[in-house]
Image (cartoon, rainbow, N blue to C red; front, side, top):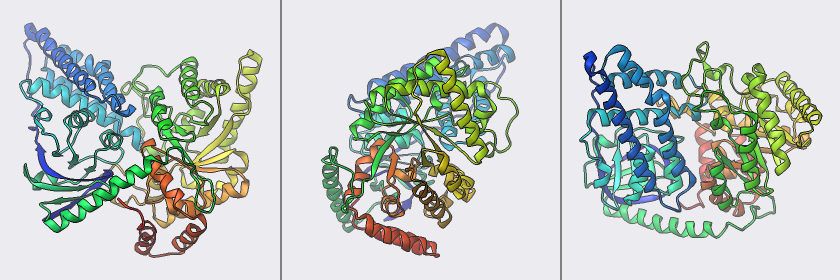
Length: 579
């Protein structure tokens, strides 16, 4: 028996036999193409693009009718990338210009796109590079190995897939083939494959680094998707224990499903508001199904991606209005643009000077204030769309009061502009700030009196505080939401909001992680915004908790100096949970 550890990205326990998905390494040839054969080479490249599109369209047809919105959107994203001129046209220009083969031309273009995405500071958006890489690899395989049969089609129902990595398309096909779980050497918790696994309810572990080296086809495996533990050739006693846990998890899921219409309130009567994070209008369906009280974070960046020009005010207005109307009176918090000067709306055009450290450069509110032509249309669109429901506006990456003053002045200026134009708008839109920079957390008491609410963005807050990149395998083991410095900044922000009489929410991944729910309630957090898939499980914890008792837990945690003891306190508080 051997145990491997990785990152659990989709909870649940699976016991079954391994199917090791091995793909041959692609060797990219490079050779000159005689001038008379250049157009034939272009035709070969276009055929690979067409075949890749057909493959993705077949995958799309396999998406279950009751699948979450993410399943379709990820595949559709790959189809759109495949049609983008930077993938479909730029390599053709290289073939004709340099008279080189299609594989070389595609490889050169893929490397160029990779360099652009590497400059992106936000880890979620930088992770979009994976989409481009996966599309490029698909086309490359169809160029180099057109006869290669998709292994996914030979997978038998009930098996556990072990692979170096998987694409969203792989995941959909494997779900269609009724696989039980998957394990990969690579990947991270915010990869699209991980998100899709959670949405489809497939237990999954990523970043094991060596699973494909140790596991053989047909070997018995146990996948613990919550703890990130993979057990190879378990003995009977271990299997018995995990089967018992499987039954408990199944019971728990039924119990959670019954909570959809229940209120999110603690045993001692404290109301905890549970909201959803979304990126696309299609995500609203999942939020409503999970009984979210509203949208706590509507990311607007995807309106700006994969296009030559930013969206117009009218286009943004229509997109925001669609989400607002779909939420039917529930509050919608729209985050203003959180892109950097290094990021391109089309994903590849020239961007001006390259930023050495984009995470610390011109991004989010800094970029927007430096480019009113980018910021003003979005603010106007939000103000106008707000007449159709309950809307809040959230400003990302605030770090100084001067930034906030400039934003508030601009909003007032645009309100007056809209009045003069006679356009309907909501003059009372609430304006909040994201606390995701340590400087903003430390001085949250200075921001709070000028805002209607605060929202803690833990993803960036943790990274900036601990000076690590959580998508970098070399250092992501240091990513610790329970680090005392992080907890102190969270507590400081909550206390600042309480003193100013304004609500404080949390919209980072920490808000949707069941391990931290009790502690955050104890610290005084009353608004959690998360992926819809985790909302009901968080609600169950809320309903089983006493806020007063959890305040004692928070005091004990905050006064603990040994980080191992701190983790033990939190784990002990969660021991009553199953799964």
